[in-house]
Figure 1: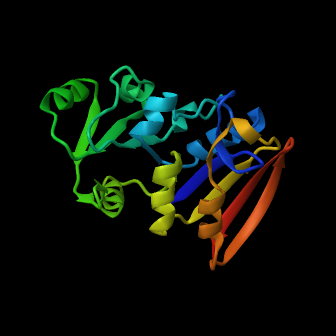
Figure 2: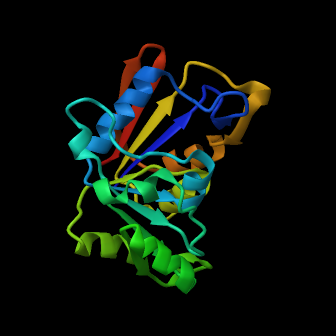
Length: 210
């Protein structure tokens, strides 16, 4: 399991005035990360908020876009979202819990694979979801999601490699969703091998559990 988070120099994950947290070099590196994994996990909230493509858009690596797994407990995903429309090309699977027969039928017509799984603490059971992903034959999983889902994976100690993309800029009053507390909790009392790459002012830090 690999996780990637992009934050500003003052630890914010969102900028109220700019949708991009990091520079173009950092964002290109994320496309390469996607190509190195056979599957990607995100949340329906990320799909709704960003309409993320979640594929690899670098010439020569396009065919290595990962299969997309979306956690969507109540099947809220818009059928107009890119990952739904693009499912015939790269493949999309939705993990859900609430039955909505009309939505299920509509999504299946769009080549979406739907898997119903149990809840744990009123959320989709992450361990059961990962076992399902393994059963499907995927072994290199990339988590690219928002604060809440990332926090859940970190709290359950499900992350092996943690990439932190740090912008050279501070967001200050325009910042939203501060990740500092979560980061400190994750790093506390753990032993890592870590390395840092400079990306034209931004930094990419890899924390790998020993």
